[in-house]
Length: 283
Image (tube, rainbow, N blue to C red; front, side, top):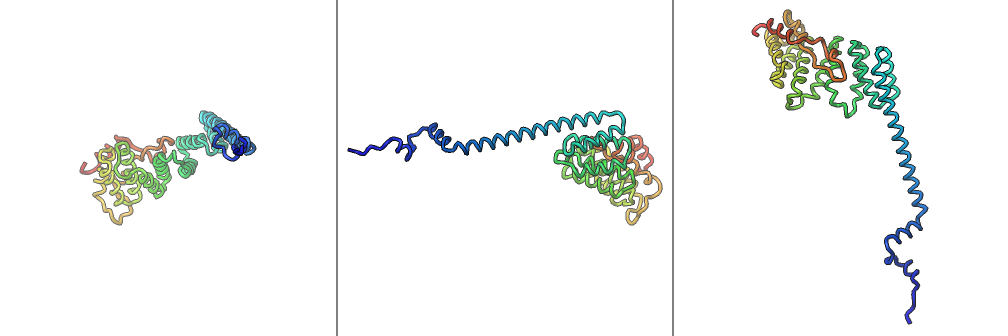
């Protein structure tokens, strides 16, 4: 007679006859201690994430509320203090960035260059990836402020930095007016510095890169004036029309985060350009 083997012995040596649910049951039964530990850790991580997110959302809501409240204050000194408090109390948040731009707008509107320049420099150095598109406009505004205080070399650096960020290859129609303004600003600063050969190159670039822009017309006027003067080794502006020429070019517009008054030296309108044209020989 064949030897009989108990069914339990067969199941212990080979579980091929077990269903999936039976296998899971035996696995859970044999490893329930480890499973409870894993579940506990997962719950703890989820709870910690929920708490952190709740705190973050609460801080974000409070920061935005504080910014909007500060920015609507009518008294200027109180608004400055409240916006500064938002920047300090909620550093690293969107509200803190908005407060910085609001402060910059206020400083520019009040022509407070002593406060505007260091704040603008701070903003430029701390731009995040979502704000890179603002950098050319902020640099242009910075250049205009440097012009106002007579720091022409620094203004030149900022204008060239802004242009380098935009003027890359072919210029699309939307960029053309702004690029033309930047070249015009370069020409104005070069002329003020007595660097007339470089000023001539800047105005020629307007005709080359943005021939259909409004500044292309004024660039022709400047070039006709520059043709009548020595361009090498001359560090002084000539007498006559060219002394007033830098004032004819307006700086590029300021960024949406800044007020138009601070984009550069006082701009002139089409009427002033027309007067320059009439006074220029050969036009």
